[in-house]
Amino acid sequence: MAASTPHLKNEELLSGLASRYVEVESLPWKPTPTPGVDMKVLLQDKETGLLTALFRWQPGTELPLHEHVEIEQTFVLEGSIVDEEGEVRQGDYVWRPAGNRHIARSPNGALVLSFFLKPNRFLTGNLAGVALE
Image (cartoon, rainbow, N blue to C red; front, side, top):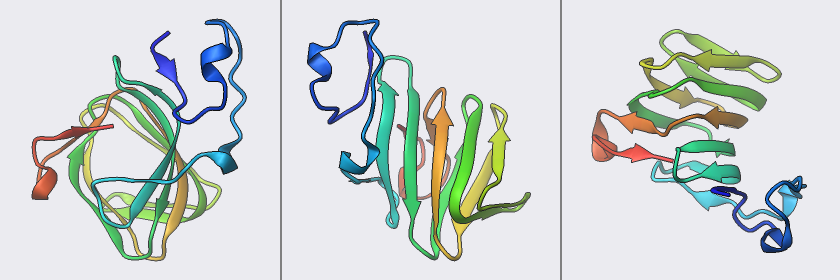
C-alpha cells in the first residue's frame, strides 16, 4: 500500500486493509518551504501526490503564487486565509478547481485542514517551477 501516515505508531504491523487511527497530537510539526507555515501529515501517497494535512500558518504568512494541479479542499479550524477572491474564516470551507491560481495570505494566523489530490505547482518566488507535497 502506497498511502501512509508518517510517524504513525506500529503502522508496519497493520494489514493493508486495516483502519489507521491517528493520534494527531503525537505527530510532529514539519516545516514547509514557506517560512511561517508548518504541517502535520495525516495521509500521504507519494506515488499519486495525495495529501491530507494540518497546516499551521503564523500571522502575516504569505504563500507565493501557485496553481492547484487538481482539486484542493481546505477547512479552517482557527483564524482565516485570504486571497484576491475572498476570505475563508474559522468554521468555513473552500475548494478550488484544478487550474486555480492565487496567492494565499494569513494576516492573523490560521490552522487549516487541507486535502490535495496532487501537489501545488509554484509559479513565482524561490519555489517557482516546484511541485510540493
